[in-house]
Image (cartoon, one colour):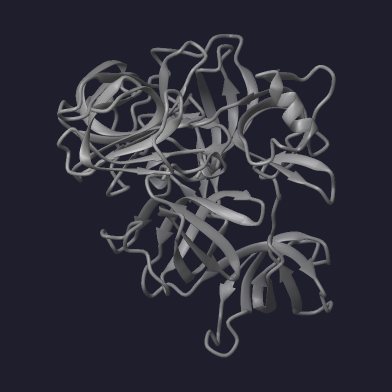
Length: 490
């Protein structure tokens, strides 16, 4: 089944902007040969890392050769401390054309770390799993969520299980944390982390931490724990690190070794900075505010909408859950929106690579074929494309992809008519899939986006026989060029 737009990430998804170049972690900095133009402007970026060979987020490539790194409150030496899917904050400058930048600092902090509980497959979508950590609902998406592990090379979407200690990075869709990165911790690690609002502080060593979805943890501050210099008070938004002394009888009682003030929107005090964010539009009826990645948005008569109909969708609240790119200026904890553009994935392919034409390691065209089915499709790969693979730890680019490789791609149609890859996932199983509009159908064949599959006696039409222009998901499970299942999509 097609993964809905609201879980794109992280975009499950999840994301906002960033990118980087080089760095001491073994990446290929090119800043000396290609200096930023004089028009480069300061910018703070929060978003999901989409690739390396520099650091990429939201299509921007940041030179990290002069950057400092703060990863989970520890100093790091370079890009090797980062991974695809991590949501990071970059401070630096961006070129006038928005394609490149220089990072002065990169910081990463996971959203939550704890034990996986209530793991379940989504009955409506086999590519989605849900679980809770300290009562916070979390969603993992196959091919969207990047999996990593300290001592378990087989850790993946397929092998995650109840009892795993994981740290998660992503973006909230309402009260659900849509994971773009999940890292399994060492088996002996009993340190956990959670973020929330301080309530019921007793003035001494105890308070209740209210998490994003209303779940609570009873916190006791350990002797000698690190706390804010101004002390602890109700209504502070903090991150708590510590252990659970009695996980069986008191699984919600955390003994804190550190309590640290946090910024709910990750931007902090970056007032008057230019900001660009990609993520899911979320409307809070209680406060009557729109937000993306937790950043509050403000629209006015000067805001530009692409397409213009997006303005109506925001006005009638039907835009809730759409995936957008937002540009504007951050003032008094609110992003004043200059431009907002809808970006929606509605095309999917599992296909063979027929050829690759690369103008740069992360810029070019992949031509896809579908076994005996007739026709090919050209898909544009850009610095905005998220590169993933089944092991989730391999860093690769277009130069690593060769003819006959199997790939899975989520994509969208651009305003120029071209098809653009949002995610590119190396596959290792058989069969073909295509999701898109029906371009032709008769008694013997069906074409989707111009790719013609045979209709056989065993072809199963779910939700009825489609017509031209209907959106369908077509599966050729054994790769023989015959459509096995054709399902009409919304």
